[in-house]
Image (cartoon, rainbow, N blue to C red; front, side, top):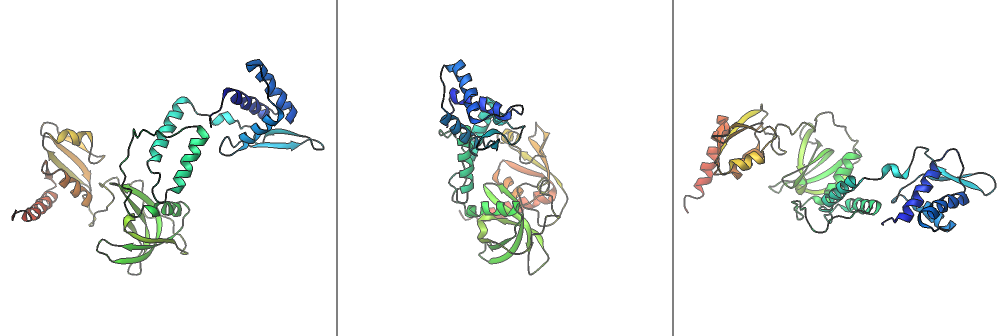
Length: 338
């Protein structure tokens, strides 16, 4: 709710009184201090009832959440002070620039309102809007790509909560071929790529030793908490796991980083330069439109290469060039009868 200048001045005076460790302010003293300032500034005063309402407002957790305590003196008398002597409601006030940045953040978060499992986000946004008086922009100036029909989004908040609180999950999973399996997974990391969400964690299997598994959320059929004790992550550093790959899939066969050189048509080249395929991308030849990325090739890289056909040519490594050639030949057979 907006705060007028009269109310803001009252909160400033009360804040100083509650922070003052050299004097004890009873409720009548607070009324006198506030009215003294109001008379000088606006020529008006407020009642004791208004000051009590101001104290209640300042204490409220969605307004200032101020640690105001009433300490007894004698009999029924008491004085008001901050429990934390270093506290001030104005320690957390935002500048104009910070408010603008907060509005942009709320705009971004608001794009995910209404998605199943995001009730918690609705609550967070509403509290931010109320606490700082900042509303999301309703003109749809910024729009993020999102697939609201994607399956599995209803599990997202539960998975994040389990990972944060170190809870083990019982997962029922369906492969793309339709086979269903159940397993216990210790959730470590959740990641979005290409508008899909993926869960990474230590998966216990009856057929082999535990391993780090990658499970797309849209393949999850059922999810519940397990009584199995959580095993902390001592295997994988997820801050670096994706540094040398495109996307989220680890190559089937372990291998070294390859220097992948790609040559693009003149029309496509500026787009690739402005939007790199990978953070390691460098320009080999501006004149010949050749770039290089240093990655471990995986299926996501191959998909990206094909998305640029016919405006791209793989120059190296030779084995990847040959693999792309074979896939093109296989695809061409489907069109020979047309």
